[in-house]
Image (cartoon, rainbow, N blue to C red; front, side):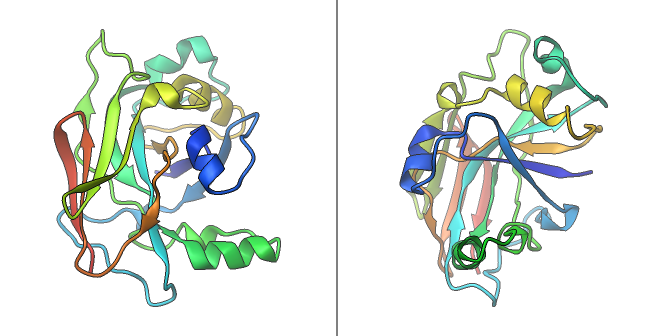
Length: 203
């Protein structure tokens, strides 16, 4: 099982990060050790002083595929959830400044908590889903997936040109604007619509 993460998939987030809007999907990986066991708190790692939350819609792949055509991509998933791509922003900035890969800022243990999955109905449009993140009861990130630069099906088709997708793989589809730091004793809750699928304490 692998975790595939899409970067800069909402224009407003690219703008807030002073990054160019991509012309094709940008992706990177997290290891399975980035998953946070259910009901465990998220511990801010000792190597960072600036860990940020990044809310994302998460898609779980349900069949293996390679070089998938976009028109058939919808056949490769039927469940979604929300997750948080925790990012050590200080480490990321340091790596970027040196022109180095920044996996250590993204792929550390526990950096990819995922909520409960829900099944998509046959009539539900994955590109019309409201997601939001609250921190201590206040909304900090909120978006409709219609605002994605690259749709879920485009992402699946693109990534599968390079990497074979397997059953159980997770795709973090990108974060909207509003990313920000977390602190000890913060309470995070991530939603699809009005359903809280992920609840997390920061330690």
